[in-house]
Image (cartoon, rainbow, N blue to C red; front, side, top):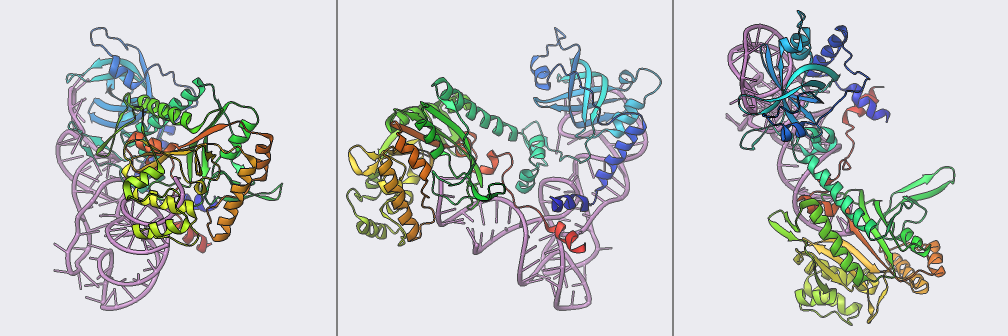
Length: 521
RNA sequence: GAUUUGGUAGCUCAGCUGGUAGAGCAUCUCCCUUUUAAGGAGAGGGUCCUGGGUUCGAGUCCCAGCCAAAUCACCA
């Protein structure tokens, strides 16, 4: 904290920042509070006026708007300016003798022309009209300073042909100062509005279906439900280590044991692993568990959910992604993992043992190591040779048992599990099971994970004794599904970087200057 | 973690084989009552990411470091 504060203090003010501080002081000297406390009685939005103003009706005859001043064209006693509020921008016309009715022209000549600048919040009262060039504008009768801005905003302009001039496009600055990015770059806000639509569409679908949104612990004594490296923290009063959740699966299943028919959670998960364009240390997964269902039912349910999401965001099931068009119209293609591998490699893995698989991998040019068990080997073949073929939404079903320690054994084949993953654009989007509810089988699966851990697989799962105790009380047949929300939003917003769909992606702190300060102390 | 590319004014970017730091927008001053990516004219503004080195001289060349992006490896 202190280090960050020092960076701010050490920062030297630029010419423009000094100018703005002087303007601020002068406003105060004129008796104008640059940060007034009183509410401002806004009665319209910029977009509303632009969309709904009618020159014949002369509606919006007493309009009151507030927002940031985003551009000014000052021409002597008359000026045009752009006001931006949450809905968009509208042009405003200022006339010296109309905003200053008496002899004193200070409000126009000094306050508006000299002391206000781009980025400042102002309030205006006036009436809507159309200029000679036909642009809907506000004829301003009254101007109020609402908040002074001390830093110059980047000026991004779009011309008549849609070309963007002087874009604020350095990704580092855009992510570190997302507030600026949101203000000046068109389309950034849209991504997050779409993200919100994705979430609402899912929530609405689940609620309509009668399932309940729940909250489960983020701080967990045993990080379970997935194979990943957790963040470790410490609770002082209890004097125990705690882990930030890597998944919420085991807690949601405890709630099914506790008698709920269906529970879901938008779960912020944390994994202490690498970062790249598809991985942020914290990310969001939606998980849902429904009693008395199986994975076949869940495939139908997932299809419907995704179709509804696409419709909510785009109004159609056809979604452009890069140079592809993805179709989220039901039903999606379904293929078993064994058939998929057969189709793309010609190898039939059914009944093959660990050595056979290891040889198959070698023949296919896939590198293997000693820690890999049967499941991991099959997974390697699939991800190397098959996964990238599935561009359109496709369910891959019936994964090998060793890869799925929380999943129920397949009803027709003991070496498989009742699991599916949904592949879109060559990547995994969702993952679902007929959940394992046999407590003795579950204990054995955990013990196998323990062996994998001993062989050097650092992703193997920990044994959660309390979860096993819950299963021993009895869990009904249940199907569960998890979907990577950030990944889904990426697909729905045509983004290839997770940072574009998170407001504040994780960044390494900038400390260069602070270090110098510290050594000087 | 590896490789590649980049970091110059508030923003976007030039800056050649090493020789006084440049442009557009923004800012400031002056002029101007319906303009529109930018009304007209003029002026000011720099820790060239940081620290070393080579050199008479480094934004430029070399070394180390910091930050970011892209590609690859691992995970969702």
